[in-house]
Image (cartoon, rainbow, N blue to C red; front, side, top):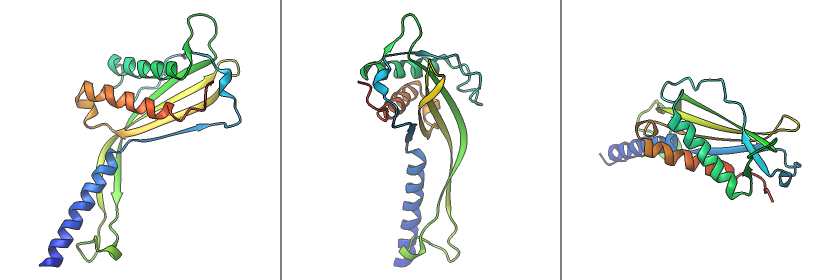
Amino acid sequence: MKRLLLSAMAGFLTSVIASACAATMTVSSHVDRSLNFAQYRTFDWGPADALPTGDPRLDGDLFFKDHVQGAVERGLSTRGLELASSGTPDLLIHYHANISERIDVNRADRAYGYCGTADCPPDTVSYEAGTLVLDFIDSRTNQLVWRGWAQNSVEDVLRSRDRMASTIVKAVDKMLRQLPPMR
């Protein structure tokens, strides 16, 4: 009986951990470390991305677009970059967004007793993941100089404008923290 109770608790904890993993925002970036980012002083938005997100809940959503652009503009401003008011900016910014179905498989480890059955099947959690990508293009060379991306479960985000706004701000802030020094 005690063993059955421990197995049930371990199964429950495994499911909770798998659910938590599915909801954790992951953020990363890519940059050429030899590039001197202090040369960039101004930015502007590049042409709109012609690719749809593939999800009608974001395609053409002005709330989403305004909040992404606002979060990026505020974040770059605090890092010393100015939105160009005239002339050619140093950087052109593009963003891309996508929503896709993801499956998180959390295989329990028999050695630690996390498996309640002899065949030890994996626990799976299915969720919708939103990915936001920011691209910084050097306007003089037309070369990508920095790319940041964030991915997070969007299940609750799509149901609440407040949650969407705060998730966008969090994702953009985490991505921009990975920028090289601008000064």
